[in-house]
Length: 120
Image 1 (cartoon, rainbow, N blue to C red):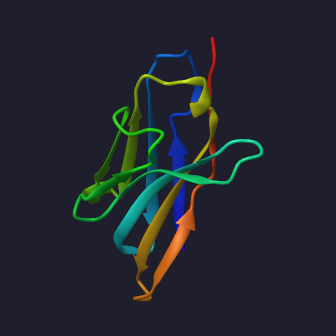
Image 2: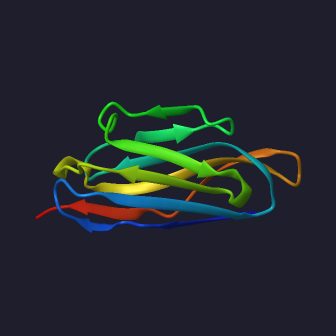
């Protein structure tokens, strides 16, 4: 089993910044893909950013140029730095990881959501 702990959400003013983190622990041999997704009321969950074990990144169109995803492989932790926040960034943010467990099987885990609210 793998546990994911997400932190860093909260209330931010428009134009502000925040940093989310997602720490994985448990029966982990390695982590392949790590990603951030978000969902706001009435909308489908969408990709914010993703990063492979080798550091290849991908970003959703709505956050390109304003966000940076990174990871600390030694500590199985992923980060999302978001700048120039807009009201439309308001959503629940989830981390997603693709883990190779000690059973030698890959399994996808979702972290608990963290609310990000951009408002003055």
